[in-house]
Amino acid sequence: MTTLNLSIPAPILTFEAYAQLTGEKTRDIINAVAVGKLPVYIPPHPPTQNTARVKKYINVLAIYIAAAESANIELNIA
Image 1 (cartoon, rainbow, N blue to C red):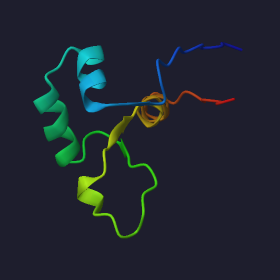
Image 2: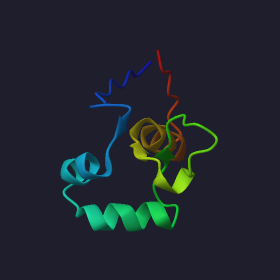
Image 3: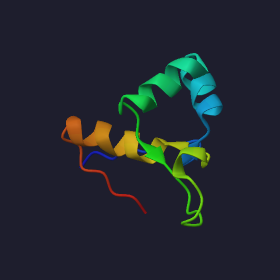
Image 4: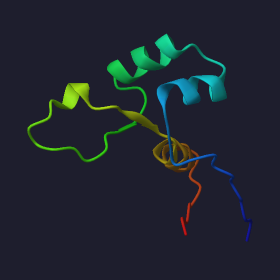
């Protein structure tokens, strides 16, 4: 059985940190999120707070999971 070990820098990253990690511009990341191309994590917030004003993060773990599924790789997260 083949084992694949991945090192994920963090399960979630700010838009700026993700842009730096991937070598893209922050504006490109914001645009990709706006059109739904990148998964986003929105932390819990009070129901009275406007969701549009809550700081959002790129869900890096979801990106790894989607990549594994598209390559037909079984992924076990411990």
